[in-house]
Amino acid sequence: MARLRSCIAVLVLLQHVCASAGVLLIGHAGMPRLDDGTVQKIYSGKMVEVGGVNVLAVNARSGSPLRSQFLQTYLNQDEEKYTAYWTVRRYIGKGSPPRELPSGAEIINFVQGTPGAIGYIDEADLRPGLNVLLRK
Image (tube, rainbow, N blue to C red):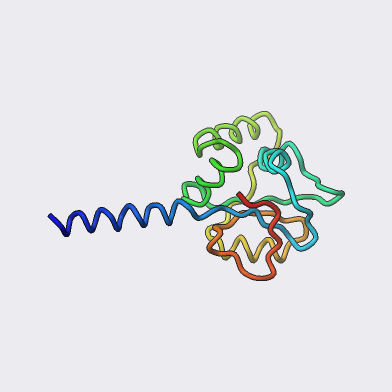
């Protein structure tokens, strides 16, 4: 019984540690800091330029914990609502959703190598030289 309690305590602690990690919005070196409203407009396809620079947003892969946390934290949506939103926009000819990349490392590489690119990563993946546009 004592082992079971110990295991439960460890699991609760791990859950707290994992839940406290944040999602950072990063951008190419020339991108300015962004506010919540701007991020929402970019990821909903309603804004394609910031400060005279064409913005190219990328998403983590659909269904990933990182993407779910980003959608909840920055857009106040879940995967189902976000996918449905983009299905309608695509159907009526209002664009297509941001490109999906399979990992945080690929998002970092894409953003660093593409002028105007923005994406999001787990705070644990932050490394020197990344341009953090918004932190939540």
